[in-house]
Length: 638
Image (cartoon, rainbow, N blue to C red; front, side, top):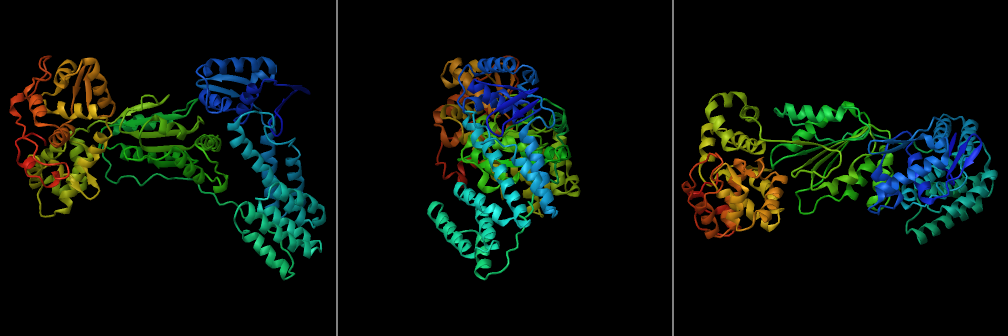
């Protein structure tokens, strides 16, 4: 059996050539052959077949194409297998011409580096002899031609350069002059061909022609690309001008680094044993498709720290590297997937000039480069699934760990891990590790009060502890008393880059107006949970109109849903919502919210609503930082 992609698509079965007349079936077969023995996801195949614009019926049509391809290829068609999420084709070693080419090319280049020039020339000639024309010549797929065919054709030209160098080292200069002239016309951007032509002419005693080639390449590069010749050509020109002997050197051996881009682990990381066990267990488990874990939780809950800690813990399970990117999902302008892919491709060793333009082409090359590699991809602070999908690996050996504030429910095949508020003991332990065990042990009750006032949210606990570290004269009790002053909580929980108010504001400000208003207004209820019907009455909307707003808040982890139709606030989020309501909502609306018995009944326990008095708004948002009205108010915003 023989499968050929180095030229028109070809299948040989016992000496018989199997034709694939249907164009889209040729695309399907080529896409499978370029990842032999690996599951190619159905959505990747659909993008490849229909050039990233698959029709609604793509899934059904793809199954029909697979069925017809199996039937048309006879025994070779039996190699195509259906697997979970996609398809694969089994190819034995030596059956795919592209694989044989890579093996011969690697051996030839190794022989060249070792000085075995005759052996190198033979191996590289054999490798190039497998080519019957441009790769995938009759496969009508822009996706495959932009990435896969481009990669294969680039490899062929690299092999040609190495073979010519071997010939030059064997003093076969006249024999390669004509070939090099043709290559410089066909590929004027490849400067090594020009340098080899100059060397061949000079060592053949044709110095004037060699100098003429320099003028030609300089003119060509300036006219067509707008750049001067590179260092190799300029050095060759200098050597020829001085009539010095040309020394043909091997190209520099590639310098490659296995990427390990994770930030340093947090030294005082505390707890999260259950979440760590779930994340690491899922990433380590053998699978037929990539393991994708989506970690989500409210602002400041410690998602990024958990991802980094878990990534470091499973690093040894991904020996081919760990890629990391901050996606800026909470920033006004999040990271573009195409820009992230470019940085990943460069980290994986792809040359800068080999990185294609466009998201689709980069994503396809990214999947190809990761093929067969055990790589972990960590994507922090994702905005949505659309930002994440192009960055996910396709190889079953790889894994991905994604963090986001919202639940990425539409991310196919992902294991969703929610990160909640830690237990009081864990939060207290974190506080003690930051301020020092002796200082924390001096007043355990005060530590418990600080942790409670921080809502046990790790960012708030960390900010409070950092405040104490920066104030050596303060006791833990002094800090707890400051946090307990009404209206001052978020001012106290701000030091350096640690700012709890700003962190929550990023999620609030990303909401649409109606959802943000619901988040603020419902926080004035003193009851622990809010029922849907009561929320609808308070917001003067129908339950059908209010439920999507509340669901969006739950998905953003700004509300919890402890039971169907009931919603609850985290203490810190409730405090923020009330503070922000003072700034943005009219007094009558806040007063009406307090006056409504929201969430009454159903056995829900809460303090009497009348305990809350709502002050009038007396300042703008910009003035809030120095406002004393909110700080001295009886409103429960802390």
